Image (cartoon, rainbow, N blue to C red; front, side, top):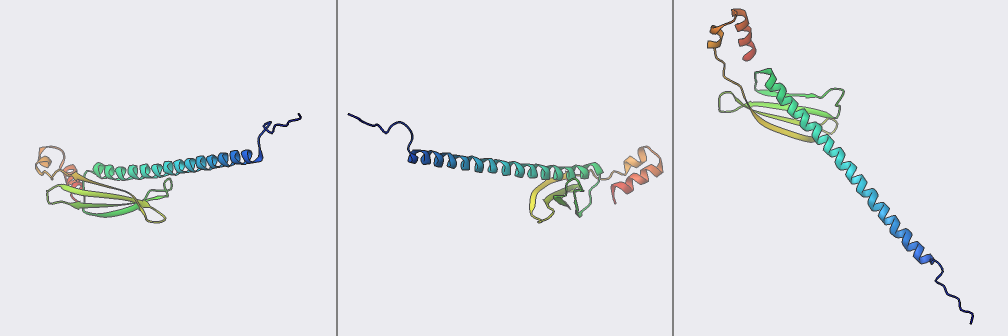
Length: 147
């Protein structure tokens, strides 16, 4: 009547299955974290490019006058990853300009973000020169408004 029961622990097969399941879950978790970090970095790049493009358009608005043509440049030492290119084109409506700013990767040239908008420049009013101010000041304003 000497019976032995083999239920007093885990078998080698059970331990190997547990390790396999644990290993697969760790690999899945690692891939998920990597994907989240890459998406976060891509979001950061897109946001920076959008802010650069919006800043270029705001600079055009702040200048007070618009001129047809294209311009390009880099974003300085603080943002070496980006280059911008802007295009200003007058539309068929007097004083209305189409502005396109494209931000690209400085190394590969691959476009990251493009922003298009319409900007309005009020037509030059010569009667404002006659209403007030010195003649030299009015002359300099006229030269500044229409290069």
